[in-house]
Length: 229
Ligand code: F6R
Picture 1 (cartoon, protein in one colour):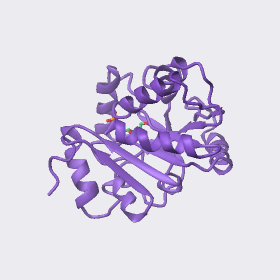
Picture 2: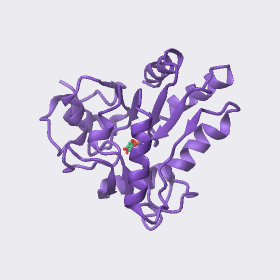
Picture 3: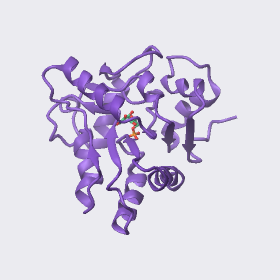
């Protein structure tokens, strides 16, 4: 899954003059980040590449769980080469509306060639939890309990330490990327993958929004595919 997913990202970096890549964080994309770091260390030029993210937890930005911490730990701190631009959402911003306006302006200035996505066990993408309308634009999202539990597990933190809110791109912005690449692995994602690919297209399973557009690619491993007909 990681190799197939990474090769799509790599092709964009190698073929576009000024590539714009928007990443996701969490357990699933770690393999992709590893391959990306290896390639940069072996000479892949990212000096023309802009790298950004689709969401950020609200809370102290030096916390173990933030998108910022993940990006520095799994990419920016590991390579010598600097991307052309690094854009991150500020999860400590006092004025959320202003931060959303600032980031939306960046999205307008830097149309994304690719948006990488993971998949929540409840079908969420970014922090668009079940029930979020399909026309959502960047907003401050409240996490479902299952998402809070997943974050606790992924980062080894307690319920009290776990973030409950996230600034996230909405469906409208996510689907605007030239390519939308969703990756999922493991048996714990099998039900969400089945709902995504074989269920009804509905905000109850946010990822099904991808079936309304023709620029989406879904890459899953055997365990995640295990409930498919
Ligand atoms: C994180 C994000 C989330 C994750 C999803 C899956 O930046 O946007 O939507 O992609 O919760 O997380 P993992 O990969 O840890 O199972």
